[in-house]
Length: 64
Image 1 (cartoon, rainbow, N blue to C red):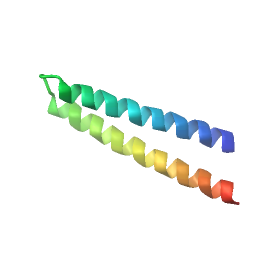
Image 2 (spheres, rainbow, N blue to C red):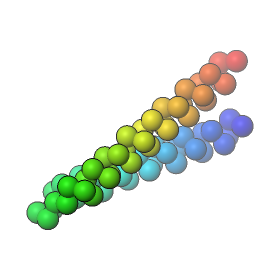
Image 3 (tube, rainbow, N blue to C red):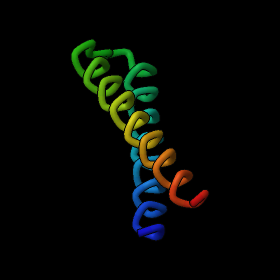
Image 4 (cartoon, one colour):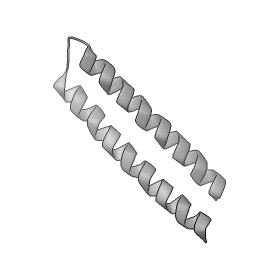
């Protein structure tokens, strides 16, 4: 169980970083699509929340 949560934590962290980088690249381009930026920001927030939930569950399991 601990190994699965650690793998999920790393995957969600990498996905969050990927979405963040794609959003920054999209903002740096001159043809900025606001719908795409909003979608990427929404995904970033969802992935950050998932990462936090997984981290909290993992920490609570490791304490016990």
